[in-house]
Image (cartoon, rainbow, N blue to C red; front, top):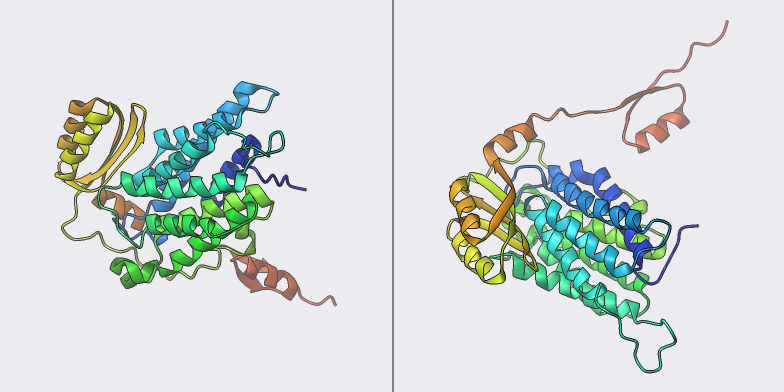
Length: 360
């Protein structure tokens, strides 16, 4: 039987990371395929997966460091957030890193017992509600120009649903997941580019996976088990959407060691150079993401602010061509009976029924 703690303790956080990584690994191609905003470069699922992979590796490092003992919950939660920060990829991954950081700011803070509490008793559900709210608000603050119909909207809906739900942590997590899933269905009507493409927001779709994993870590029952896509209807075009005409040519991402004042000035400078500006982090370490035409100027701005490193520059046109040229795979199963054919079809294969010749 899976462990079903009501508290998001160290073991539950580890389970959350593992389940989320598995879900994003399974769904990354589906999420990549519906990536049309802010740039249709077909990598949102991959970016979310790589961001969560970095978070999971950081969590595993903490468990390794503690040896046979169970780590302190605060250490594991901070490691998850830090791992996501240093490994964040793309616009969606950077926002996910800030969502996790916002949650960690609440969940890793010292827990003060209230009068009347039993020894060790805490309002775990209340902490989770506060953590989800902090996550959503901090993500909005990290984005220079927030847009509705994105994963920001989905995160806020999750926090709203959690705040309106009584009960234990597992019930609160389930409410957050349900709220996020419902909000995701509405994104095509909130953002015109999604409506034209007939898809939900890719970043929000990935966030639903992460919240489903949280439900699984706290209840032992992951909603994803009910069917791929969490009951979310998506319709992707046969061909990858074209890049938006007139948009910036490059994505620039780097880690930055700098003080708060320097980062505030950097935000202003980068906002004048391009769009999709997201700056996440704190305590002297930041992850900077921006879309620009002049990649050199974006890096120079970072040098003026502090010490940029792990600099990554992506040319959108080249990335879009690569996404279109990816080989599409299919599975064809040749089976001897109708029962096996039905099972293979349900698993997504194209089946060919080939009955053996009768014996003579």
